[in-house]
Length: 261
Image (cartoon, rainbow, N blue to C red):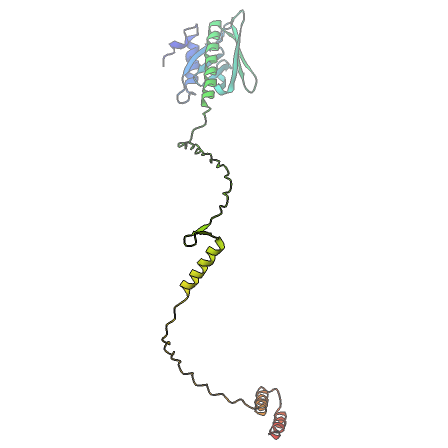
């Protein structure tokens, strides 16, 4: 890659080339360098300090031991809180302010380069904040959102005015033969008599045929029950068989019962 884009504001091409060769090996996937600012002290400096800005990080490079050693302070944009610079007689003092740790300052940065650094870093910080805000996703809506069904309108129940109880009308029945009103009691009595007559069966003069009565079943033979002595003898034999009494007791008691016959 050409380094011409990094020497447009008075940077020393040899120093830029050396710094670029060191930092380019530390770039991650998708990372590219945007600007390199070099320290320029009034006295002759072989290898000055520098600030390099990429699209992801800031590299503060300090050469030590006559260029044989290099100290790097590297910050990602999420680690940087702000940047400040102060223009002095001989260049500007640029200060990087991280969220944690001490501030890092490099002085004698040419004023043009300090302003360019400030502009690039501020734009990157603002972009970081914008991305952070846009990264907060709004709550996702469910794939299917049922439309609430409005409640069915309720039809008011009509209020039926209370009606007065119908008055009981007195009804009289007119007898055409006598041409006089028939009272209700008489009408009911006549109806009852008519109903009774309709329900009463008519009898004929012919007597009904006699009913055939089946013969009664023969009585079962009565089993003759054992007398009292026989029952006692059976009980006595049962006691003896169960060995509840001795043979002598059985014989004595049996003799007593047989004497009673």
